[in-house]
Length: 253
Image (cartoon, rainbow, N blue to C red; front, side, top):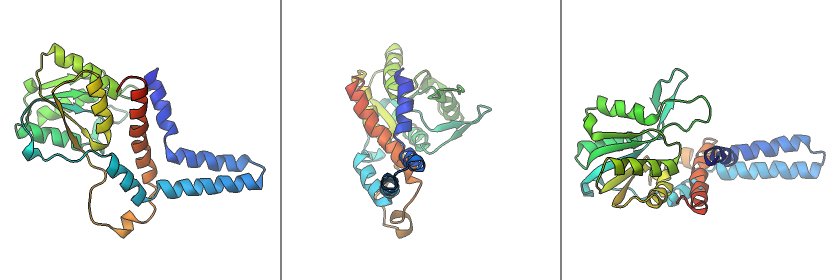
């Protein structure tokens, strides 16, 4: 039930949907005064959630600070959260926007910073069940010269809470000893950190990657003009913010 409700909540956290609902409401109202208010509210929401500067400021404050690999100690196991693979109708997998998680993990492994890789993540689809991401990524790690004996997979979890709980059971059954390094997108790290600590993980450190906003030079054509793509980016950021609050209220973080 919690899994289904989380999917419904994500739909409600999409600013584009708010704007669309307001415009649809304006078509059915007979009051010119109310119609005008609906138009203005939709316009203001579009300005706020398509403004690159406002989004960048919010995202920078939410992101975890980056870690320099050269300063990291050695960890027994790196815990990789999935959420980077898209599957087509034939169950062929393709790397998506968060593929930096994979790149960071294999780099950490090749540098000897992590000795083993624990991949946690099944499928988050409500309908049309897809292959578990953990299985797909295991094959890709092996294809990139990672020793199969150094890979563990947890392929049943559907959300971050289950990532933390199910992977903890796997680590305990495999008698893995810390320290551990949690690897996920920087936008997702606050919620992941709270969940994993609540799940009982000890001796765990954090490596954020997949930075959506970086401290670069201002570009007027990209950073000042409205960008409709940010309507989707805001929905992902709001999902993390509200998701963390709900996890805390329900005792999952």
